[in-house]
Amino acid sequence: MTSVHAHGLGADLPPGFEGRIFVRPRVGGERPFPVAHFATFPLPEEVGDFGGGAVTLMRPTDIFAVLFEYGPESLGTALFARQGMVRSLTTGDFRPTVLRRGLGGQSGTQWFFTESGRPFTFYAVLGSHARRGTLVPRVNALLDGLAVTAGAGTGDGTVPWN
Amino acid sequence: MVALVVILALVVALLAVLVAGLLRSHADILKALHDLGAGVGDPALDGDHTGHGSGHVDGHGSTSGPLTIGPPLPGERASVSAPTIAGVTPEGDARAIAVGHSDQLTLIAFLSSGCSTCAEFWAAFGRPEELGLPDGVRPVVVTKGPELEIAGELRGRARVPVIMSTEAWGDYEVPGSPFFVLVDGRSGRRIGEGVANRFAQVADLVRRAQVDAEGSGRTPAAGGPADVPADGPDGPDGPDGPDGPDGLDGPARERANDRVLRDAGILPGDPSLYPGSLDDVYGPAGGRP
Image (tube, rainbow over all chains, first blue to last red; front, side, top):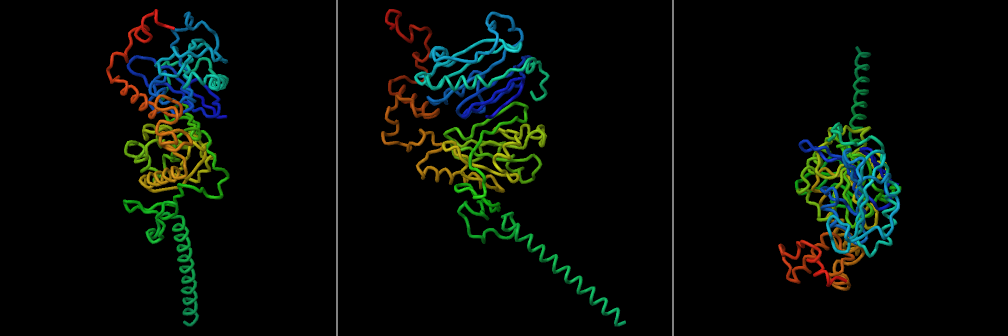
């Protein structure tokens, strides 16, 4: 199984998945935080945080997923009250209306949570809602391999390569 | 006096033997380099211009090493599988590319920061729009890992994905740099590999490999559905017609959607594309299912 690790995030990628874990370059005074993209199709070089530029490339059999970290000011808020990443999803968790960009046939799910003292959202898109029965287990396999390390990748601007 | 002459004759004879030995050794080295296609001699005399043998000459008259892009791979290869390439980027991010799980051909360039022959390829990958690769071929540069390469020297040198992974060099049995591997994502197999001096040669051979693949019934990087001829038995839109997204990948799917919208009289900027409320989508509330 292929593994990737950076910025306090890690993933054991199930077969067929590719991914990247990165922090966007700082612009002005903003503090970028780690983002992880995972996909069962070739990820373009330029992809928006939540899949802009990628979800339009999905085939019905494809999956796209994002693990996105928010700033520490989000800790303790109601939105991030859930402790721990969701690890098992059902087909009922995916809905065509839960999409950042509504594309016909696709469906998505989004979860906000706090893990290892870091606030995150997990967002996943299925290429075909009709095929969710076969695609959701693959999303769960991805979730099973995701790991978050406490205190790393907090986007405090000290990451030398960004 | 006679003894001196004899000694001088012996010395001259010994030197002659040494020189002959050196010349023989030099000739052996030249022959070995020539057999490796390292640009010694006149490769144009080799007579193999098919792109599958050695001594290829490109349009610029440059010479190259043996190029075997296109099946079959050398028999000594332990495997032709194409494992996922994972590592870090020169920027310190993590990256994994599943080259064996896509509809595309992937050209993997194994390069080093310090190899002089690699310089041209680094420059080429700094201008990806000028690579001349066929549409849909994904270029990826792989260097050795950060324990053997200095990330700072790689940063910004290429505008294609760059992954630092010593493990990948082992997985793909890379003998040295530069080295190129062509992977067919549909079969998940390496379909070619080799070395070159100029990127134009590589691009040319990738085009040939793509044609070979298409000729064998596969359509890598053509944007069509897997294992289906470009137009398929049911026409260009497949059995579901243009409305059926199944089997269409990104660009083809977008084109199909655009065509359906155009046929329905919905052109770019049409107000129906920008609903302000659910009623705009589903009609008045009473009309919803």
